[in-house]
Each structure stands twice: as structure tokens, then as C-alpha cells.
Length: 136
Image 1 (tube, helix red, strand yellow):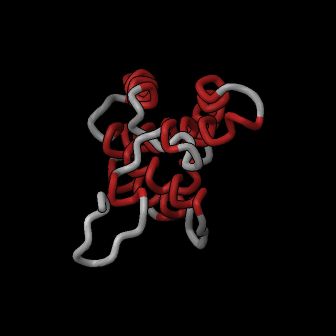
Image 2: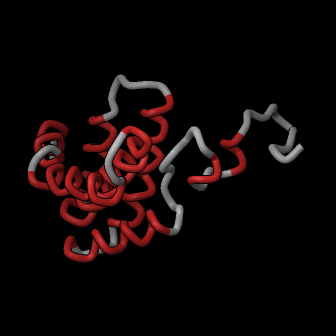
């Protein structure tokens, strides 16, 4: 699959399903914007991996975030990679349940501004200098 084909695939029916899922899992209103975004990216990337394979899903998700930066982009990239790992070995009909479970278990970053709401690896919680521990 070429990059333009991956991008086209990523914005078709898969993206529509992911958008609906994000609305359902994340809930309404501004307080849930991060949750909706996490759920949408998780289902989208996992479905791409299940339908097109890990490599193509990676191409499509990276193309989607190309030339982007900032906290939202970091979170999207993180969630996309986690979702691809989940979806790559699943059949498409298994993906939604697996992603729902992973969201409920805190696998994805659902609110980067509230560390209680999501799992973030210790090395990403605060900057560290070479040779120092993030737990100091």
C-alpha cells in the first residue's frame, strides 16, 4: 500500500466507525475531549492494523500526524502505536471489544493533563537528565 492509498483507507469507513466509537466511549462535552480523541485514535489505528497490517497502519497513522507537533500530537502518536500493537493480531470484528477493554484498563492516554486518568510511563512523567532516575 502506498502512502496516498494508506491515507485514503484511513479516512473511509474505518474513520467513521472510529468517530462514532469515540463519541460513545468518551462521552459528551468539553471535559471529555481527550477521552473521545483517545478512543477515536485507538479504534482507528487498531482497525487499520487488523484490516491492512501493522506496517500499513503505521504508515497511515504517521501520515495523519505528519508535520504536527505539541501535546495533542504526542498523545495521538502514543495512542496510535499502542492501538496498532493491539490490532495487528486481531480480526477486524474483534477490535472494538479489545480496544474498549484496553481503554477501560488505562492502556491509552485519555487525559494528559490529569495523570490520575491515564497510564503514562515513568520516563515520560517528567524530564530526566542522562544518568538520573525519573523517580528522584
